[in-house]
Image (cartoon, rainbow, N blue to C red):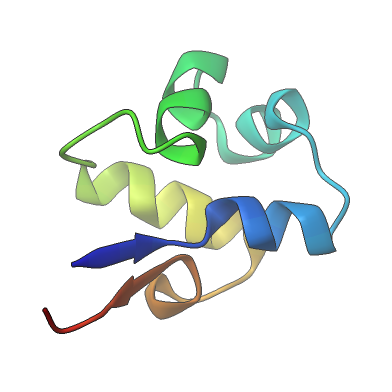
Length: 67
């Protein structure tokens, strides 16, 4: 299972979805869908943009938890 920790990162940094989307150059809808686990796939480019905007690593946003 992949655990999505985007909401935790945004909460610690007190960023809302609109601000995160603006910083990352993504649409609000894209951030909303990832934040609320409403998507089954995430483009590598999107992950790259989030990591750059939030100054973090992939494993800070997504964590693999063995079944």
